Image (tube, rainbow, N blue to C red; front, side):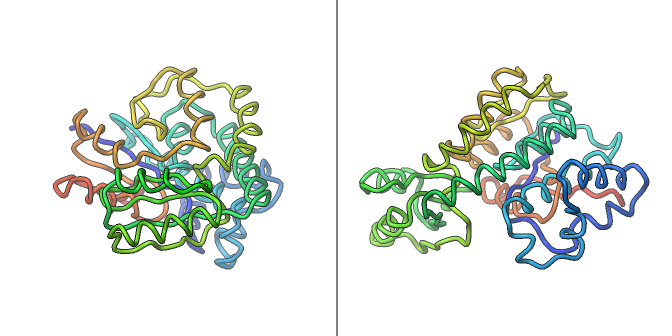
Length: 296
């Protein structure tokens, strides 16, 4: 049976996340403490006992979700037998580490650099994102191109749910036009900026050098990457796609469709929450989904 392991991105965090993993055994505790050293602050204190506001900071959120996912995958031990992996945005880094393409240390450093670079890009220009519900992808794409401000389709989450990203004015104009075109809802998101849009170009430039200098190996199974939803095992192609990811769209709908077409029978979400399982079910109601658990 082909099993796809999927890794969540920003938005899956919650206070108390990872504490059970920290207390699981000496190996998991050592990884969390190593992360505290690498990051230069005790992220475990914020994850286990911080406030929602503390945890919402991009520089905290992204490493926190990465750590929860990667350490959980390691704790699965021999049960972690992926036929294929994918991650939503930030989750792509968790997937690469879990599939042996990136070391734990390098993955965490890249995630931290990515979070800080994105934060800086957000501060350069006020920008935002909005979830558009109840319209087909083509209509959303077409209307975005009609707006003169910066606004693009950013996250293809599932059929009928596409997130747009851009300048505040661009997103506002697009939301008005999309509502007129029949969207059930155009809901502005509580995010720091326009992720997966051209406004992330400064972050992409900053992160590019770091990714190029990082050793990436062939993963133990194909990784389906966000930028085009296709399967990759070649380290150079994986690097190029990671660099393109910051300004490119997250093609999650297409990723799930391609994994299903390639024989995925069950999807296991590795990390906090169960958002991705819900999205998989909206792509294919028959798909089997579950959460990774070390207590099985």
